[in-house]
Image (cartoon, rainbow, N blue to C red; front, top):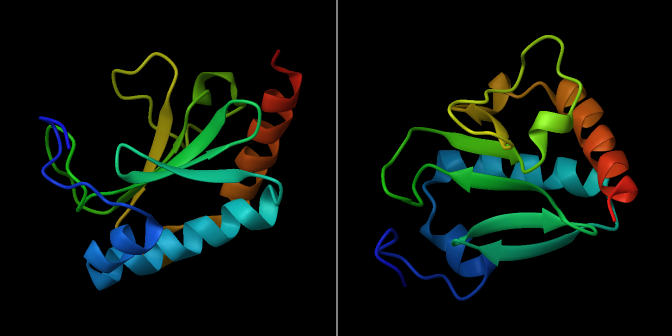
Amino acid sequence: MNKFQPVDFQDLDDLFAFLPEHELKIVEALRGLVYECIPQVKEKLSYNVPFFRLRKTVCFIWPGAVPWGGTFEGVQFGFTHGHLLTDETGYLDAGKRKYVRTKTFKSLKEIDFDQLRILLFEAAEIDAQKR
């Protein structure tokens, strides 16, 4: 446990048991999409949320119920090297971050699976080119 998080999950099952039902459904849908697009990805709990990596960390799923110096509503899907993605429509949010790009979903119906597939495939390609 650290000063930013009053929770400390031992594994994904701990996290899933902690999440409110509406966030869990969004997390499950997003995890399924990550595995569909990048089947060889490795999932690891970091900062008490799922991070997915190939050579480097590609993306993460951050449920709002898991605090980090503040809270937000919904589930955030983030690309750790989002600044390298082709996002001409501005689908992802940069906020005040230099590299990370995210999209926050408050319901399943808000998820644009086709758009996220395109971004996930591109993120995997970018990762494959990294040294």
